[in-house]
Length: 123
Image 1 (tube, rainbow, N blue to C red):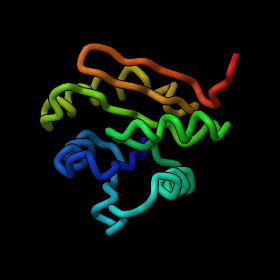
Image 2 (tube, one colour; image 1 turned 90 degrees about the vertical axis):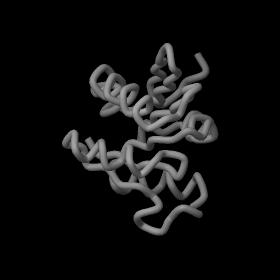
Image 3 (cartoon, rainbow, N blue to C red; image 1 turned 30 degrees about the horizontal axis):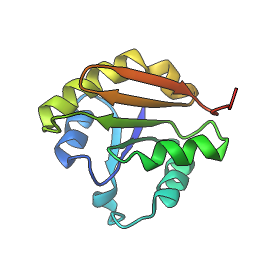
């Protein structure tokens, strides 16, 4: 699984993901921390990466785009310490791998997760 971490995600989380065998990159590593959200989506789509973010705007942008990729994991945890984020990600990546490969918005809180398949329909 290939992942792209937005600027709000700690580089330590990206390093942890790599240690778990994931192909993970951080926007900061590529000097792209000022990239607009729409451009981040284009980059993720071109590189077939799942976006990791704390930014709710990505969910909206993907929902209105009508596309089924890239998938996104939106982390909405109360405590954003690295070990807590990593624990939640470990659970989400194990439980939602198939949904993420097919195209989904996964919203993750401290207590729960919600999966919305892409493309999002109004029905």
